Length: 266
Image (spheres, rainbow, N blue to C red):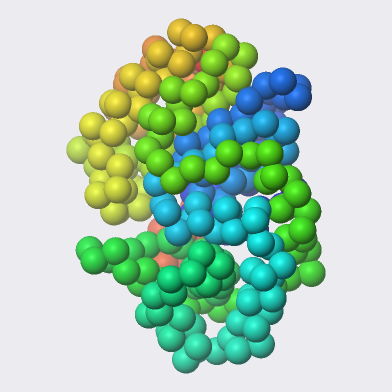
């Protein structure tokens, strides 16, 4: 299944380069993902039972509407597809819809037409990414009905990662891909990570994961390849550095290969 959102820091590259790290899920296992984003891993594994969550309420609302009312969502995005222009983009960016379906349509529209699918807000919580180069809002590969069917037995929550992790039990698979904040924030990744996910959050996450591992949960963690991360998460399992290409930087000279660390508990 193909994700319906593009997300900075998404893990499509991991699915292509390190498939051997992934477990084969059976129908009795629960898949849990507390930092959902675009859900590349979730859509790749297509679990029958899952709890997916994120603190981004607009993101989670989009998944919930996709699950509950994909047809209305598709029809609304089709109208945005026909109206798409520079003026319409900035009009939508400044809008504040109240209904769940209109909020979801706005979120997906902006995600698909903004610069590089980047999600960024200012100090007042307002989405402020400029328009990108894409002219299409809907694509030939879109299959909202299939995604909706896949989501029917999935629990979708807009809560803190700890609430999701605590629900993982022996044999369940937990995929954890937090914002890449490192100690002292000298990480070379998105500069505002420290504002949305602090070093103290990294410590709290590590502590939650150690408890889950002790319960027999299979945990796969991705994070920044940085000595502070490797030291913090060392007790969680075997570490492997993997290189990936980054295309997020506005300056092409800042793009290139970056190392990330993959931590496997089993």
